[in-house]
Image (cartoon, rainbow over all chains, first blue to last red; front, top):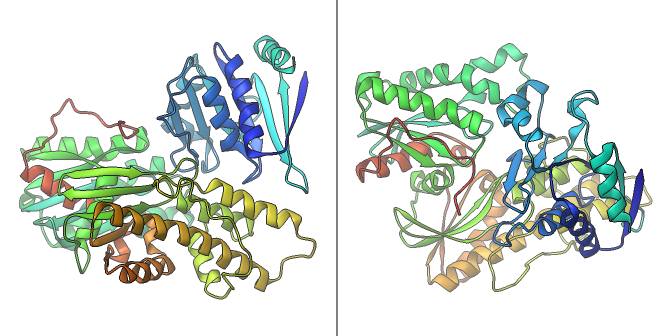
Length: 154
Length: 333
């Protein structure tokens, strides 16, 4: 199942993330793709809001920190694998523990994992057009992801 | 009092020997040492595994350069957090074992407080109280420092760190990643007024930062261009982007000092190596009759001398670590 959302502003991108976050009630793994400046952090800020992460936590880019963790109805893990040079380095992040934990797990730049390594419930891509409007394409696989996407599309 | 400092919170493994909290006898950072050469000169982007391989050679070289032996060390300080747990553990456990075996006092240092202490190692250390902007790839924090142990966090970034914005814009311009330093070089040749990128002050009275909007604005500018980029265009974009960052950083830093009634401002962290930032802040500070304190260029990035300097103060105050103490990944709120 595939859902496409069009967002014409920063606020709408965040609102789309918030709606998605509000529907998550248990473990959900999400791969997040998009060019630099496409709005990935903005989208995850929305997810955090929807998950009830307190406002006192700023949802910031994990590019340098590699992994950020936030408390919410379901704990949110926000990872960015952009700077990893080798798949072995996942061990240092505690990646295996996190990816199998009962949290909402967002992984940016997941390409290094290879398709065999993790089967994400949702595969999310943010694209921008010439006018810099954002198209968010969400693909679901498996029961949990498909159910969530059905609710989201209503 | 001679302190051995150790830093391993992120990409660098570093060791330093500092006397009395201010005199640097040696400061070694792993990327400068032989251990990397077996990778054919290519340093892994994230050198987490390297910490384990680098720690012993780096400490050994720090002692050699300082011209001392283990017997001369009076205390040990290692970064405790925030950072990557796997990386932090290497340096922290090393310090723990070293101090225990030698019967020395030892302490864990907050990496960000370490950066603040880097300005005390500069030519003109700031007098208290002062406001400091700590800007790096991972942080953009404003602190009001009122005593050697009191650091009030006044503001921080809500999305991207300043250094990260530099690196990502460099990537968009095809200058490689990370390329923050390249932007500065190119910016010197460009026209900073050519493109008016947005300045995100958020609440002008507040001290939080936001750079993701600026990053997106550069992406949008590049996407909407019709003609291919000439080298002059790239320089103009770099200069215009840098100007937007400097405007906000300098404004917030000076305004924070004004609100707190401080006569001294300071810069620290990797972004403080940007000389255009130093020049801008020095000029804006002088207009307000404030002075600017900078760390030595070699101590802008991650290093262990600043950890030793901060550790010296903690050890003198009796703020020590015990064997059952552990590292932490995030700054506790």
